[in-house]
Amino acid sequence: MARYSAPLAGADPQAVATGILSVLREEPGTAAALGWASVCIRSGRCVPACPEDVNPMMMVRIARMIASGGLGGPPQIAVRADRDFFDRVRAFARLQLTEEEIRNWM
Image (cartoon, rainbow, N blue to C red; front, side):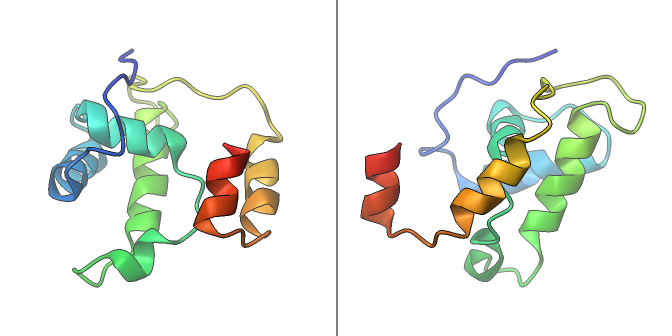
């Protein structure tokens, strides 16, 4: 199983999208695509930012399911064992913090 190591902040959005599409076709994903699929918190901020008028959040969610081996294929990313992780992330996202407040928390 591949581990993500490339920095997410410097990832090219088109390259990430291409890698996500590869995962959706049940092909190996790129490090950047798998990285984004691994850390997506489903905030939805990507939806209005997408210039192609698609729902990238749904694409990443499905890619994460596939990449984690959830559809029976080989896992490409590690699965979080913490069942409450996403509930906590959703609660944190609902706080609607500013970018500066988020940087201070991180």
